[in-house]
Each structure stands twice: as C-alpha cells, then as structure tokens.
Length: 605
Image (tube, rainbow, N blue to C red; front, side, top):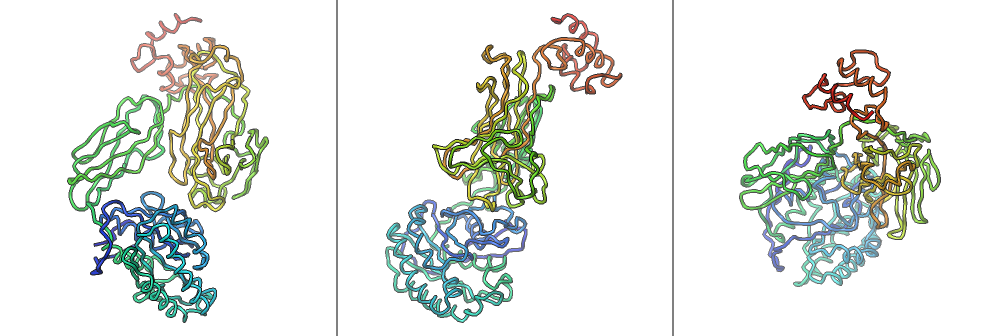
C-alpha cells in the first residue's frame, strides 16, 4: 500500500492500493532503479515540481526501496515553490528524464544515452501531449512510430526492463494546445496499441490509464496542460498503484532530524555544544540514535529525548549527523549540519580590500566578468573557465532578490569561479595584502562559501567545492578544503588557522596573500565566495594590541582591565570582560586582579 503522508504543507491524500495485476517478472529484492521519461508534465516548472515529488514520498512511505534515476535534476523554470515542496532540496530524489516542450521524436534522439546512463529496472513513460499539441492529428502518427522506437532503444540497453506506458492526461482550455484536445483520445488508443503490440514476457509493458479519472476542472493549472498540485497527486497515485506489484516492500526506515544546533551555527572555542535530534518510526519504535562528527561516533542515546552534550570542542569545522535505528534494524541518517568552532574573537583585523566584493556596484542579476583585476581582486582562469564578481538573483539564492544579501553572506555581490572545461583547467581569485607575516602570531582566514540553488537560471553547473589559502611570500601557510558543505541557497563560513611559530622563519616579513579556488576538477562545477576576513592574534603573553610587542598601549589596556572593563577612557577600542580575561587573566580565576598584575609586570618588556 502506498499512502502519502505529510511531506508537504498542502493537504494530500494519495492512497495507492496494490493492484491485482499478474506480473511475469520476478519481484525485485534489491533497490529498484526507476527512470521517469516524459515532457514538461514530468519535468515540472511554473513553480511546480510535477507528480515526481508526491510519487517519491508515496513509495518511500510504503517502504519501497527505490532510486529515481536520470541525467536531469531540475525543473524547467527553477522557481519551485518550497511551501508546496518543502523537501525538494533535501530528501526528495530529483533525478528524471523530463523535457519541457519535447515531442516523442525528440525523446527518441536522447533515450539511448539516457538509458545507458541511468540503467533503469523500470521505466515510466508519459509522452505524446506535445506531439498532438504542436502537430494535431499528425502528432498521433508521430507518437505511434516514435514510442515504438523509444521502447526498442530502451530494450537494446536494458533487455529485461519493465515499462509502464501511460495514456496521457486530457488537455483543457488555456493555450493553443486546446485546439487539438480532440486528439487525446486517438493518441491514447495508439498508446494502448503500442503497449499491447510490444509487450513481451522478458520485458513486460503495462498500460497505465492516467486519463480516465483526471478532472480538468480541479486538477489543472491555468494553461490547461500542466497539473496543479491536486493533479500531481492524482497522477502519482495512479503511477503508485501500477508500480506497487512490481516492487518489494521493506521495513520503512525511521525518520531523524537534528534540531540543534542549527546548520551554519558558529561557536567560540572551547565550546560546549548540545546536539539534539527528533526521531520516530511509523511501524515500530526507535531503539537508538547515534551522533556523529564526520565519521567519528560521539555518543549513542537509547532513550528520547535524544541529546548529547559535546564538551570542550576545539577549533575546527564540524559536520554533524544523527543515525536512527528502529526495532527491525532499519536505519536512516539525518541531513548533515555544519558548524564552526572558532578561536576566541580576540585579535585585530588584517585589512582586506573589498572583502565582500561590493566593488564594483552591480545591478541585480548582473556580473563583472574576469579574467583580470576586478574590485582589487585578481581573477585568473584558463580558457574554459568563467569568473568574476556577480550579483546573484533570487533564482540562485532565495534571499538574494532586489540586491539583498544571500543568507550567510554580506551585501549584494559575491565572487564566482566556474570550471566548464574539466581537469586541465584552473580558476582562482587572489589578493596580495599590505600586511606582512609577523612572528608569534596566530592568523585565522575566514571565508563564506556559497552553494547556489541547483536550478539556478544562469548555468547548469553543480557545486564545485572550495579551497581557501593564506600565503606568505607566495608559500601556502594555511588552507582549508571542503570541510563545510553548505545547504542549497545559503553561504556558510569556513576558516583556516596557522601559528607563525610553526612556519618557515624565512617567511617572516613576507607579504601576506589570500587565494580562493574551487576544489572540483570535473567540468561544469562552480562555487561562490563572500566575506573574506583575516585576523591575527598575538601569542605573546599580555600583547593586547596584537602587534607582537609589549608596549605602552598594552599597559593602558591592562590598567583599563584592572580597574574594570570600560571603567575609564581608553585610547584603544572599548575593553570587554571577555577580552580582559582572555589576555590578562594569567591565574585563570575569571577576573583581572593584582595577582595578574604581578605576572604582567614580570613579562619580557
């Protein structure tokens, strides 16, 4: 039984009863690969994701172990309504072979490559609407010959594939296609003939009637061609009923979500972090929840509420997951949560020009393309790269519309690096700073890394990962690569830290530089960068102004702290209690007192 539950905010009631069909194929025992082939009704667009969304969750909630496969993972317009499809970027399997506006002859041209790539066990086909919409009665003949060719090509790659061939949904008023709505019935008669003529024991074809119970009055968007959410649910229910006898139900895994900390949260080291998770099981009970940082097991909790207090967490980037196990042994891993634990925010900023790439000012959805110097940054790329400064639209980051800053970024603009050539290409942005490497310092380079929405309108690239580097005299002294993986549509901070005590002494006094790269070498990969920050913190005891020496400025700061934070005018920035204790609480009693004064005046002045 396929029963849709609450994966969407809309009210859905898809019930998929197991059909009485007699199936000649063996029941699948492993994960079943399902390829959904179609036109815009399958691909989705105009804020809609199509029946694929509801069908995926119907199958998951029924306990079927399936994998949607295909070369595409985006809708036509990239503007899916996340209120209708809240799990679109997380647990929904977006892979498909749907093509907006395509006829059967166009699908016929790509189906061999699609099948070779996807290696499906089952193929769902809903095609022919564009044939008759664009060609009228001639489209019926077009679909007849091409559907047969499509099936032949699928079988040439997958001789034992099972095919579910749909009779198409009706066409309503709202577009020019309605002029040919009377061709839907002849088309569906041809589709029935194709299914009957080409059915074999080795590769069965099942005719799926998507037409009969499809109500134009309640299930169609205004264009009369594409389903609304009610129509999507109807189509998913029909598909699910046809699929159920072909699939082997398994024990549905439990659900689990990390509720705290929030993804992208930052903490000061040493940090005490409470990790909490919600976990439940639809047909049994949860026996345990494991908490992980990367591959490292932190704790196992066998009783709800599921929490773990992670104490004295050192500086670093961390990726947290929770794994729930139910009473039948099924497991599910939560979506990852990335957090950063930073060194205490004591230190001074090292000047970086145009750290958030706001120079030059750009209108929404426009860019200033490299290679060359743009806004004080040097953009270098080989022939098949694309790079520069970009003001991303809402289609790239949900919060970026109208020159607003994307979540986790600062300002309207970001830097972009795009490799569309492959392993032989290189692409980077860099800046040489006015400061030099000082001795007895700890440097921290922080950069916000952006992962654009996968359906962004500008290029069909995927996230390229990142490498950030701090250099002295052209030598890399600190770097970080791919330790954070932002959620789609947001920026997330990463950082690299180095003590100048640990670097080659010959590099002291050498100019500092920052370099940004993408880590992926495959083609069609890109990454966005923002908020480039560099701080230094003195490792010299009592060096409050972080210039590497004890001097009168440090004495003034100590006197200020000894009298109480902000107790008297201070030529330096106002002193906080945290700053005072971090620098001057030598006896670690939580305050700056005369015991600390005795230590301070014995330092190497």
